[in-house]
Length: 83
Image (cartoon, rainbow, N blue to C red; front, top):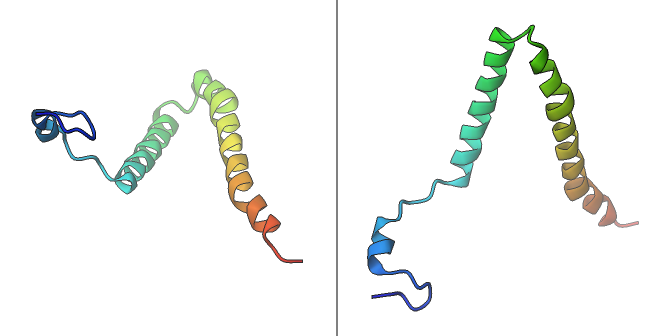
């Protein structure tokens, strides 16, 4: 029998796994990124491809991320400040 609000049958509802919490996903990503950095620094320190990845991928994405944070947090805070 299908649930009228979602259209999902009862057998489908029972087979769904519980979702992982957001803070757990963030923590896993943090650990994975730290491990990737340590491994690449330890084993591939002289690899030219690592320099290319850093110059053309990591640095621009990091700058974009920080600029987005500034745009989302700092600019509204300054705009809401009373004169």
